[in-house]
Length: 273
Image (cartoon, rainbow, N blue to C red; front, side, top):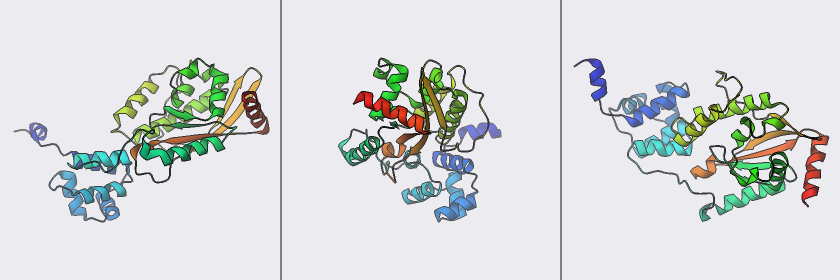
């Protein structure tokens, strides 16, 4: 039997393939990962090659050493034949009531400046009144009746693009962030699908091969008529959640870059009072 035929007949080794893939993406040797996980290099080698099965505890140790997301930790456990460790609930679930209250407080206290909550696919799950006011002023009330996606709003030609004075800079920064997050979660089919949809949008900035993590801040210059507002955003995550949904939430908080922008946001809030 030739080598290629033999490889096709070999039993699948999902745990080993996953570990090797994550280890390679993090540029870790077997010795480095084994040290971080507190196991022997020989044991790790056997697990990666399928010569030995890993216990649930060993898989969790490896997941921690690789700094895997909760979603990926669940995937690794399932590949090893174990039940998931971490729940994935809707944000409206009673178990997440405390987290919802914390998020509501963040959004409220950030007024009169915009803040939104997005999921792992950049869908807008929640927005404070300031964000709703600003988006309504720019896009109109009818657009606000349909679901919003943070990335698509800025990248699509028929959404915010006409109102973003520095669109090429903003779009390039957002694409870098989206690419980084998509590459970090290759097993997340939902996220990969959304990433492919974004990449099919017309007139996107030229893609770069720079895979470094994007910077945390990017100034956005918005203008509609005589109203000009400059914002800089920061992304917050929730502490150390033990729920997949909570870990994947992002609170995007935007601050005015100058006194004129602050005054414009305050004026919009006054109109809504």
